[in-house]
Structures are given as structure tokens and as C-alpha cells.
Length: 454
Image (tube, rainbow, N blue to C red):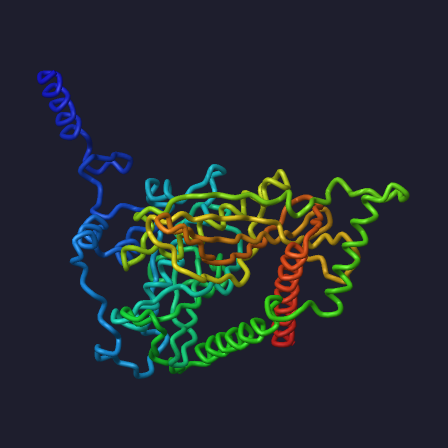
């Protein structure tokens, strides 16, 4: 056995010595970097995880973890900052590095969007800490929107960039990010290069008390910066207004109540033997669209504080479950349209169990006439998939909601959805409100662009 081992070692040594040093496709055991990819580009992973988990884990077991220092005991610079102070960009050389592309490719040969979402959340964290400094704890509070401007139809190098675009000195800030085709050396990203845009809301907390702390406000210089700040302010005010009229706080309005009643009457007809009306084959009970996953949270997806999962992993997991749900009901490959405003409620600890439930909550092919505009072409349907997440503490059995994520896809099939219970009707109305708000905002944007052209 010993001679066989020495023979294998000599073969391995000879193979490494004889291999061409500059061969792009060659990989050696010694070529692994200190921090490998976890689905997030290595540069962003290195910024997110600064301590090997085993070191932090051992210190926790020995009660030797350093206690967080309160932000009140640290001298912090809260003077106004410029947007450019927080600007950060990363180039993903997907076209040049086939082994990096291996972490981003899906089974259809396209870029895996869920992995890009992980990168975007990691980049938002980098941008946030450039604005706040390291003396505070910054977490993802919400993803306000992710929109596809142009499909990622080919493999190319990507440039991910972002900056803080709205901050008034309170604890929260809006970070605007974009994904674009990487420009040539010395050139800048053009409007036609932009593939995806998104906005994250980050909140800064005191590391010791976990309570919100003030951060530096933004000062604007150029007309473009003023425009971005105004958009952030409008988004902030809109979220406050929508939270006040949420279905958890107010009953459905008259028009929505009439719609619920019409849907209920339609279902009665389906079950009435005295009528010829029967449920169409393309009409699905909402309950039948539901799928679930359960997984334990591993340290590879931790945030910079070592014992909590970072938001990008939740984005990736919820998106891929939503995609699977849309694919399962349509028997097709869905086209991703947008992530609508989605919230993170409670942190997800390393070692806990994460439960995800995806449900088709709304389609723009209505079962009854409601006056809603159909955004998808004839024969296709835009569907909104809602993913609810909750986390369970294994030791104590305590379960908490961790967030709600709302994804819109388009599928090449006419599909209708039928809610049955009161909870399902509320899910339907909530999703319908999101769709109508999105359609309204897109119309306003189009009208502004047309007025500028005139």
C-alpha cells in the first residue's frame, strides 16, 4: 500500500511539472484561492466574510467572542456625503473565465439570475458600508424592485455597479444598482448596455443594541444626482403610504370587494349541476400551484457578522423556487420580468431551518371581467409568484416569518388563477395591487419620456 501511495504521488508530481503553466483550462490542486466562490463573485465574498467560520465558531463555543461595541461609544463622522463617495463597481469576467462562468451558468446555457441577485445584495452591502463606515451593522431591509431592461441572452463580461442615491440622515438609505455589459477599456457604460436595474433599502443598526442609528445624509451636486435623490424620496413616501393601506390594516375597498364577490359567484357556478358553466382547463386553483422547500442554513452563506445568513442567499433561493413554480404550472421556461417590492422581516441564523412556500397569487388573464389591463401579449400570461419564508430555531422550535418576495414572470400560455379561501383572496388582491401600481408607474414614465421628446 505504501509503495502504491508513493507511485501515485510521483505520478501527480510529474503531471503537475509537465503541465503547461499558462494553459487556461488547466486546474491544479494548489491553485485554489483562500476564499473560494460560494455563488458570489470572489471579490464580493472577500468583502463579506472576513473571518473563517471555524475561528468564529470556536470563539463562540469558548465564550471568547468580542462583544460588539455600541455605535454611541465610537466617534462617527455624520457629515453629509456625496453619492460618488459610496460608488463601487465590480467586473465579472464571465466571457473570459470559463471556470468562473461555471458558477453562473444554468442548465439552458444562460446566466443564472439567482446568482446575479446574490452578487447584487453583496454589492449593496459594500456600497452601504462605504457610506456608513464599519462601526455600525447594516442589513438589507427590502428589495424595492429588480427590473430586466434587456434580456441576458448571451455570455459576456458584466459590470455591476451602484451607489447610495437617497439618505436623509435617518437609519435607512436607498442604494441603486445596475448590471450592464462590461464596456471596453477606457469606455463608459451606455444606456444600451444596461441589462438590469434595482434598488435596495439598507438599514444601519447599533452593533450592541441592534437598534437603528443615524447615518450621514446625502448632498447632491449635479442635476442627475438631484433626479436620483428625488426618485428615492418618492419611493420612500410611496412605501409609507402603501403600508398604511395594506390589507393587514384596512379592509378591501368597494371595487375589490365586488371583485371578490364575482369570483366567489363564478366558483358557485362551476359546482352547480343546474348550470352548464364548468371550470376551464386553464383555470387553476391557487392551492394547487403551491410548492415548498425546506433546508438547513449552512455557514457558507453567512454575512460579515458570521452567524447570520446574508440576504442575497434568500434572494437566490426564493427566486429559483418562484421560477420553478411558474415553470411547473405553465410547462414552459418562464421569462423573468421583475421582482416587486419585497421585505426582509427577521434575520436567518446559521444552523436554523428555512421554510419557503411559493404560490401563484395573480395572473393578468382574469377569470372575471375587472377592467384590469393585460400587459402580456395574446396567448401569454404574466403571473405573479409570491414566496413566503419563515425560519425555525431547531433548539427551541420557535418559528418566525423572515420575509415575503414577489416575482413576476411571463409564460407562453393562457393561465387563470382561482382563489378559494379568504386568505387566498387577500393574497390575490395584494398581488393585483402590486401589478396595477407597476403598470401605472410604467405609464407615467412613458408619458414623461414622450413629453420630453416633444
